[in-house]
Image 1 (cartoon, rainbow, N blue to C red):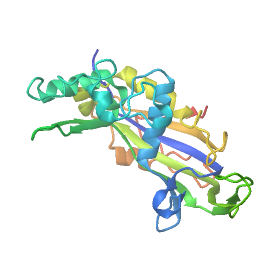
Image 2 (image 1 turned 180 degrees about the horizontal axis):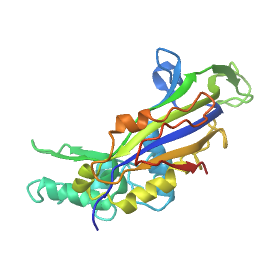
Image 3 (image 1 turned 135 degrees about the vertical axis):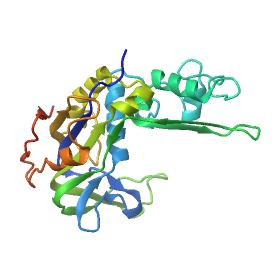
Length: 280
């Protein structure tokens, strides 16, 4: 099967209401903000959601979170060296398998590796280790709110003893909980046919991502993100007519300027008609 035949750009519009879209562990898990007060959802967070949706869709994924672990492997190394779920130790041994061949097998095995890339870097008992770099064709930028966000913080408490026999109660206070009251975030991404040639990322793979992006936050509920509090409102999908594309990604992304209410405003680019996908 041939690799990606056309350059693709996309934008994801996310509505947040009374949720913490991406907590910052260095700031008491408050929603991430930049120095100007605009909210941020990291690219790592967004790719985590994409991987989770890929797993829900039955795709093979190398980087699995603990909550979405489907094969029981306890580490990336264990998964990579597994004969059943991974490549096997012989493939990760550069003396037995060339690095380029190992990278090719990894891309064939895992969707997220051929999409986002991966660095397989593991130490061995001896002096030599393994380092297999894979550069992926799909890039996802961090998402930013369209206006400075307001953050509400509340103190949460417990009503029962966490330890002991219950005869002595410590302070009821557990900690703090933070939320963004109402905001719209936009994240941009792109798919490079030139890099897809190296990993084997195909038009069919791109179609799978296109189908999953509107469902990015479905099945992702938690205390910080109750069901329905985060949703993809629209995905804007630009499919160019060639591998090189008619326009740079910077120009394509710059043609999209939704207002703070999330209403779409797209400056037409001759020969490049965007497709608007409604949220799930």
